[in-house]
Amino acid sequence: MANHEIERVQTGVRLEKRLLKVLKALAELKDISLGDLIEGIVLHAFEGRAPFGTETLAQIAALKAVYGLDLDAGASHRLIETGKDGR
Image (cartoon, rainbow, N blue to C red; front, side, top):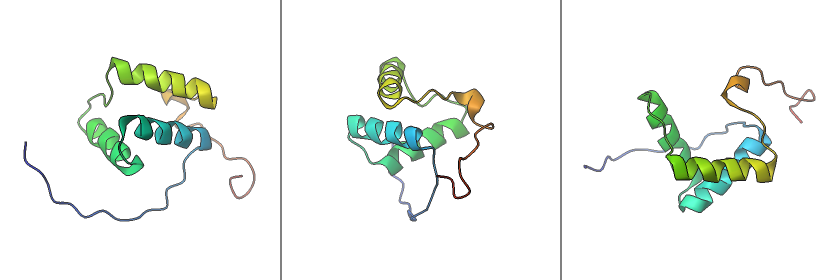
């Protein structure tokens, strides 16, 4: 497989707090950066492919329990921020 030269940019993305905690913990478990994890998830999603196997999904379930993340894909378009500044 060939390597691809890319240019990365810094971005200010707002994410649900518990979701971010799970993502950071998963990246740490996989020994990759948060950015690399998100890029991998998005590239898989763009091809309609699942980004995670059975073992990683079990790790994600455990992390969701640790951080109290009870959201699922169905919640993705029904999230409402608390407070006027999202806090």
